Image (cartoon, rainbow, N blue to C red; front, top):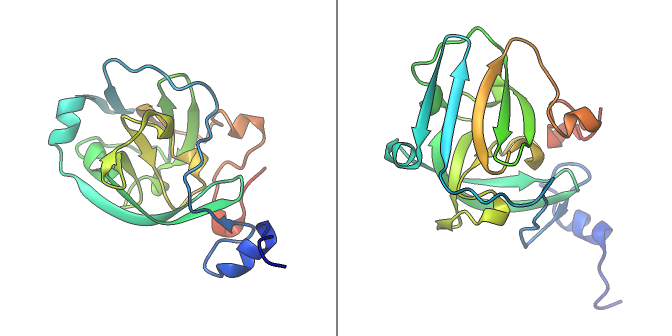
Length: 192
């Protein structure tokens, strides 16, 4: 049959996708709530030993990194070879000591997601402000979003406002509703 393709045929076409994922060529917009109207963006990074607050200009003055990687949504789509620009969490946490092993990201609009600190540091996560050479669109989390490409995309909190370390793992928004606490797409960690 010509012209009829479904999810199953798309899955077979891309063997480099995590289990249960299909190849997406677009960039679907999925959000837990409405897009907030952010008039003055500011980022807070905090541990039990200190904190820092960055204005938009402070943030853009930090060393920037370009990242090309795949992204995976828990709703089963994967987009290959996406291009991002932002500031590494290693740079943002520089000078802030912590004994904590977990962090909570919070967004303008009230969204939260918990992440092990080991998944944020060591060159694994960024605060991204550019996608595919353009400023990140508000519907995709602009002006800036947390970007953790090795985890399902709900962990990459849109409209990020702050990251606070925690001594224990406390569920964020989706995790409190039954989503997996970690979210590794290669292990299909979709739900608890």
